Image (cartoon, rainbow over all chains, first blue to last red; front, side):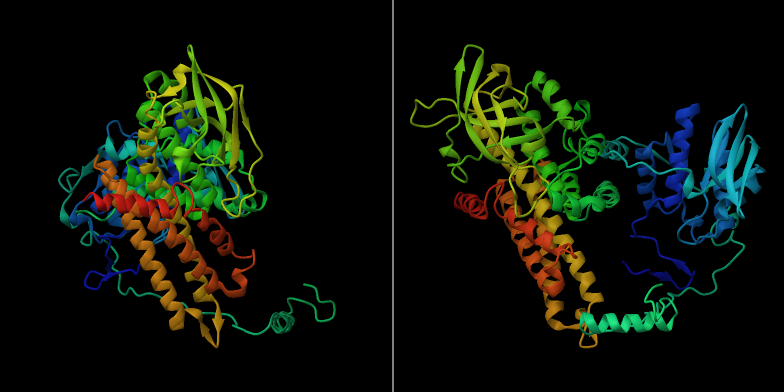
Length: 257
Length: 380
């Protein structure tokens, strides 16, 4: 596991030189988009905000089946919290011609895990939003979606255009054929938009445009928990049985759990 | 000079690893135990272009460069050496020669289904009396109007048990003192071709290695690959690519051994501390890691030369020689690190140990590789 390097001045993680991957649940969202396109037709555009090496992930998205990939990249975008990030993404969406019928996001990322960006984009674009969806169907000119919420299964009708965030249950991402990767990297095009393309100011984006500041960032020390024992298999088995009995996981007399 | 993989090559590595861990890893132990390949995985691999790695897209392949090809074989072999062997042999010494030396009709008839994994390929060279000494082969092909009649016995045919297309290496002019060799594309269903029982192997279990007998097997002249007498040229050209493939396979085994040995050394405690804190174990792992990296660099350099269209016979031989010896050593030391547990089937290291040895033997023994390198040095 490569060590994480932190910019102590800006309290951000140094991403340069680090391999970036597509957020796993975004692959799920993309697979859901592919299934929708196969049933109903349409075009899929993948948009991501990140440093220049994010192009790698966007080409992977093309190999996955997206029709178009757009990378929002500018030094000014760096250090953004979820609000500044969603502001840039929302602006990029307004630049798409025609305006999309549906914006699909993963429910949350595996790094900061906030789940904010999808709902923040929806609010900025004044779109109806449903989070954590695991089923989508087009019904006339609106969508029928299902999601599990607090132990209840909700079925909702959503008018278009809309934004949905998806949960893992909606789809299983397919494995990418290797020829698709070759084509995406040799012929595919990743469109790049920066500050000027999106008609944004430096104050609205990046660290400047963030409503929150990271105060402290440090690796949590992983305590090695548990009881390390050594000895012959016989002794170890006896030791384990005594421990499990002490925790009432197994019954002393019956020897069962 | 660029030594780092490209963005594309990093994504390819990641993609193959994801597939291997999701689909092949759960069945690797069973494959080794039963010696049977699950055909549904072969079909999946076919749809994902694993059987047409360097074949252009117009024939249904992935159109990858040689470095990317090496990465694919390495990553598959890291999870299952038997599958890595299947993919390497099919691509390097069966599909590739059909592409390089076949005419357009042969490419359409044979290469397209091969590239899509619908027909798995073999390259039948070795015979009971001809291993390293290729010129001793006794399989003959006699011209009879617009057909050739083939008679002979091929052994240790990798992929033999599930192949649909076989490249048979035969002599076509036994009357002359200097033998002439020719390659023929022979379909498995052709009358006169018989497959023997699958060998019970020490390792690479799952790959259906078997003998193939040719008894008055009539093959249309259109199935001849290249010209009469071009067989040796085809074999030598093919083997250079084959060596990059097998070197990558050996590297995958060595890398897997390093991965599990590192993990075990951190988890296993003796004398109150993890094995990793003992100098002897650190030395073992440091040597292993260094040699694995060295093998990777040799492989990627020979693949890079191949991609540039430059001569790479010596470099490919060096890569195969070194990587195979690194695999044998890495698995031997890895098993030693695992101690008694490593000698049981509860840990994968014993399978890696059994798998690694074959890499020093097939696709040209280590002795033959040294011969090739020495000859190359002589002419420098």
